[in-house]
Image (cartoon, rainbow over all chains, first blue to last red; front, top):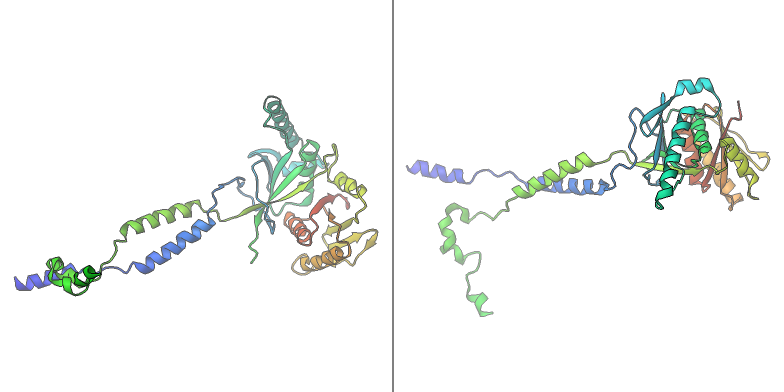
Length: 163
Length: 174
């Protein structure tokens, strides 16, 4: 009996893990993540298979029509409108598939604008280009957009870590 | 005053009181129950980790003149026709940079072993900015095979040296 009681008394003081350091680490982590946390969410949906170029620009992206140029396709709002290889063969400064899409979009916006004063055609576009695309392709896309009344571009880039 | 003196001091005198019934717990310091806090922190961390955006997006804004029917070449032309400002053209070709301004050519900046010599271009642009402080326009004349990343970096160099109005032009070598 006596032995057992002593034993039990010893067991009552069970080993406690040192929580303090763990809590410290977790708190620091929470603050770090909270600092990085952006409540804006993804304004620009990043296209897959596409690596954006790096830049020192700090301008924030806005929600607008999105054209993606990957090494193979040209996508408008996520739907493919042209193949790069075909455009290379065709030459010139016009991309018919993209032009059709942009014209439809513009007409749509202008029709809505007739009924709703809050909507107006702004001609804004976000262009997400892969970092390896050549200039002629970019020029073609820009020219096509320009011809269809879209003249205000935002080139999507990845923020470079500058010190 | 008198109450605090006569009352049982927390350390010594209370030992004979209620606390003694607790047995072995008496001498050990009170520790906080961290469990709920830990639970909360861990849930918060997992939430934040899932939501965190590792690639920070930004944009470079630039405009084409609203002239209809013109491509980027037309953009450069109309900009050149505008205003009395000095127009500075930076040719980006596969061999490197060449700055042309007001009919005179500056020394070409050849491509180094590691690609384009951006710091050198930056120095030239800085000098030009000192010479023409009011000038803000610059035309980038880009060879058709130049890679997008190089275009963006060239534009960065222009912007960093306070030439915010950048126009893209091309088709010179075709």
